[in-house]
Image (tube, rainbow, N blue to C red; front, side):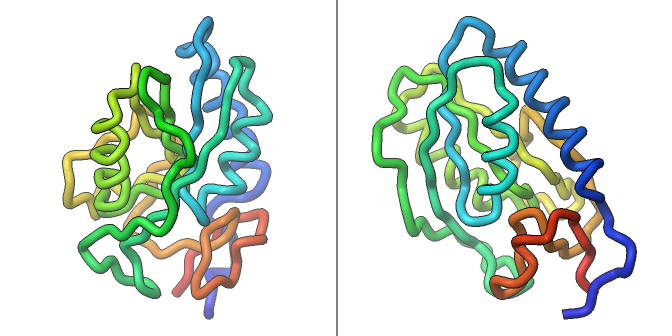
Length: 171
């Protein structure tokens, strides 16, 4: 794995953005209880940092889905783990590490929307709109990035790099 020397996003930049997103989400959901659904494995660190900064009550569930094999999207989504409890009547915020083609995010939205939540939105740390193949638009976006493969802060390449505090571009 070869990386660009300088990080695309430093740990400090990421944490500042997480703080900003938490403030926006807390304001938008004031007076409501929120259910975060973290998309495993990539969003785990982001979801954890974000959740600790929210000022509204927030529960947590997990969903595991994938549409990638190494660095390429397979064009379909496969669910490996679903939330334990139904989301009916709840304010649900899907927490994504990155929205790329939108296939995974769209599949998760369709699955959860069928359960009739009170509201359903997406918060993503990274957004790659140039690669979008679906009509999915996150309500909350940390950073829009170019079409680059990135690792760090939960995102990996073959399970490597998840624990890095910065986000790097893989060559």
